[in-house]
Length: 113
Length: 117
Image (tube, rainbow over all chains, first blue to last red; front, side, top):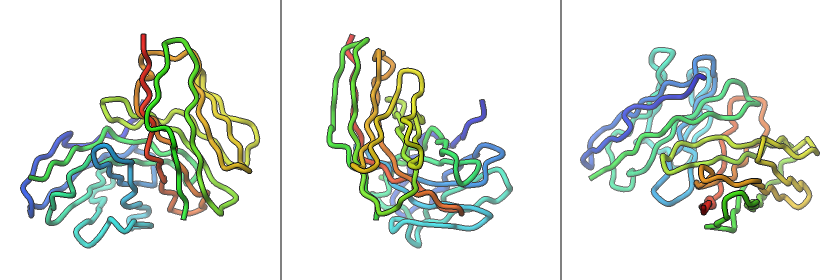
């Protein structure tokens, strides 16, 4: 069964460093998402991406964040200068059409020291 | 703005028994989707069940069923014959029915379910 994959599973970084979180969505999916979950809290939407551009973003997704689909398979989330409060689980999700459910990857745990 | 409320932070149930998790939501939309996702200790988000708001019939997936009350904006999840593997966080989620490229999920805070042997 096709699945969304994410790498790395755990990333530790120093405050102020740049990180790139990688996702490979399911191959025939067209809509891509990033969510984050701070430990013990609910899952929060960051950004949606369709047709090679951002279609919607939350207030969390400020200028420090960017997304890219560089090669038609990978979908990346970049945080330019990490802060302590960026420590969270980051989930990538994808869906086939506008009316299907989203399938989530296993997440990347980001720890900012 | 849409909101999703799960009023039960934690619940427990004996193996083989039935448990119901509550979810209410607030929206001015008339057409939307509702979901229950399960998050076991591995923290992977797994879709349990979905409901289209325009469908009056409650969705069912094996031991999982929902009670969707559109007028009351209520969407509860019933788990029958609970199994140890059902132990997880359960998140209720809302998605607007949009014809375009949006459709992000709005999650509740979750209910931690423990199934006891």
